[in-house]
Each structure stands twice: as C-alpha cells, then as structure tokens.
Image (tube, rainbow, N blue to C red):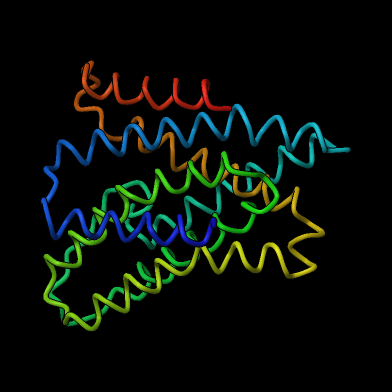
Length: 225
C-alpha cells in the first residue's frame, strides 16, 4: 500500500495544478503544514526510535549530521526544490539535469527507511510530497519544455520513492544497515523541514496563518502517534 500512497501524493499535487491552479499563498501554507508534520514525525518518532536501538549514540549523531550535510549539497544542485522553492530560470533549451538527478536521489533516499519505520514516516512523506509536486509541476509548466520531457520528469520523480521502498525492503545491504540509513534520512528531514518553516518568514514578521498551519501539523503528529 505504501507504493500506492507515494505515487498518489505526486499525482494529487500535479492534478491540483491542472485543475484548480493553487495560489502561492495556499502552497506556502501547505508547505508550512507539511514541514511541521515532517519535523514533528522526525523528532517524536524517528529520533527516539533510532537512539533506542543504537549501541553507539555518538555514531548515530554523526550520521545525522552527515545527512544534514548531504542534503545541503543536494540542495545546491536542486535549487531548493525539496522545500518548495525552485530558484532556477530556464529557457527550455537546456534540460536541468542536476535538478532532475538531485530530486530523484532525494526522493529515492526518503523511501529507503519506510519499511522499517512504519506508517508515521510514510504519511509524513506523503504530506510532504503533495506541495512539492505542486511546485515542481508549476515550474515545469512555466518552462518551454515539451510535454514529453515534463511527463518523463514527473514520472521519474514519482517512481523514485516507491523504488527506494522496494530496495530498502529487499536488498540485504539496506536491511542490514537500516538504523544507519534511517539516521541519515533524519538529517535530511531535519534540514528540509527547518528550511520550509523558517525560509519563508518575511522580515521575521509574525504570520498568523502560517503559525496556525505549523501548529496543526505539530498537533496532528502528537495526536496520531
């Protein structure tokens, strides 16, 4: 079922763009909600679980830091697409291969620990993928790429997380080092979720609607764990 939900999340995000064309304000609020939910699941579920199983807590801490560093490197190529802000301008002549590869790597990696962490992580990724799919689809439509290129881009991105789930469940390497991989993904999620929550603050002003979206994301995690 996790495969279906992960695919459906991207499909829903893309469909929303074609049907209702969500406003930038709505997308920002949805991003804030998803970022809060992702951060809450990471802190309340993934971190305690990994440290509970760890025999060397310092090693886990180092791996988490490595995950943060890796995501910051990927972000330099993806131009911020993972947290909903694609800082790239395209004339449609040159395909953004670095953006494509880094996004696919990110999507693949976040699927790896799902089999070992249960439904909480699955739903966090699903909620996160919907606004990201909205932003990515909007970006692709605004470019001058052919429909074929856009379709290949979206389908590849859609299938990466399910592919990660499959390999994370079937390949011995990923099952043997499941705890370390989860710790690495914790670092990735910490980086992405905090950027989502704090990057969009204009002049550090209090934004009531964004605060409510964040609060709802946190409360949903608390009452569903």
